[in-house]
Image 1 (cartoon, one colour):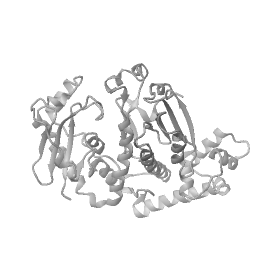
Image 2 (tube, one colour):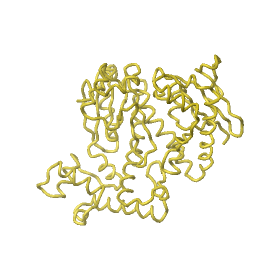
Image 3 (spheres, rainbow, N blue to C red):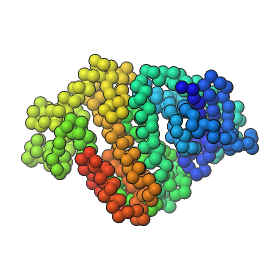
Image 4 (spheres, rainbow, N blue to C red):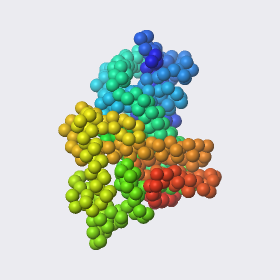
Length: 416
């Protein structure tokens, strides 16, 4: 494949690429086996403006596809962090690539916005050349993975999470009093932007930016998030991991709450909360023989865990069921069976959710309602009353398409 290595350099290293005050400063472009060039857009060294038209239909290799999509909706972009993740279960490390002049400017003038616009262009070129070398080393190893699996994940996963990021998270005027002064410079048109990082060890995206961990936002801080439209609605899955596993092993739960159903296995005097605690203890730990014997669900889960472990030991990898991503034994040294099973549950949960987000965004296309936050087993929507009156029912139907049940909360801020 003859393509281009493309590395965007934004005016401000510390702003989100979607922030209204963060613009493209330079674009490093290197066609394979040719000399690189730097296209200028916003830099003190030149008044000329670059042109990206020639890249629109070309294969592009870049470190972070979401960054590039914030500039232009390029079609054929391959994310090298993700490719390295498919190879080694971690993103490409470039933290050790240093250019003294860049470090000097960014360390001394870290409070100065748009510092990249005054760092000499040839120093940005020096840095990008070093990054491009690392990118090509990973690219040259692509034949070690299932390319079709990578291509589909590269297309679907990044599109799904970028589509949420792009909507932004509306926040109230006094957001700094709730989340702290650290978020002040990250506010853009009364919104904060999240950053879903896909290449985590367990396969479950993290989500934080500008000092705010949106994936683990404390209840008292959720009130900072408000609707840009009319009101917020959160849909939260009931016992999501348990239902996903039930779907995988073809175990059909009866109507009602899963933990009430499983509580009957543990004993008639077990409360809902005790049942929930025991279920997760067994799923992520040890399933006692008496529980496995009493419950077809746990018997099947034990079989599935053993199957994953056997494949992992004998084949040297285990494969996720939807996108067929291989989790290689060589990349996970000294991992126990229970931990591998936990990794697989989180990876499978993510793959289910990627499909769900894509379907939700197709439905919401050209509507005023936005999906603004994803929380593993929950989805937060900014609802516009200008949309059709069935919108909540339609969203619920999409979320429950595999028979999984959701609960609904709504209010004028995220504290509910």
